[in-house]
Image (tube, rainbow, N blue to C red; front, side, top):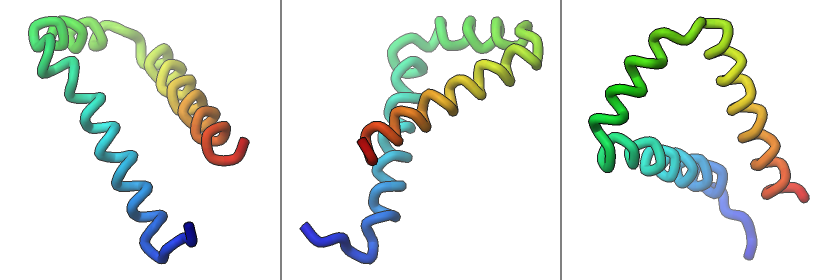
Length: 70
């Protein structure tokens, strides 16, 4: 299949759509738990949140690299 001019945008929008579906599942299925979790996150130190965010981003990059280039 030949790449089209719109392929990168289609890929980005597909990923964004999948991300929104995954992000919405806990709020739809367990709204009470989601609220409790959000309140607990407020108590986590900023440095810890930054480390968790960095690990999540790095994990995502590794997955994308493996899927796209390996």
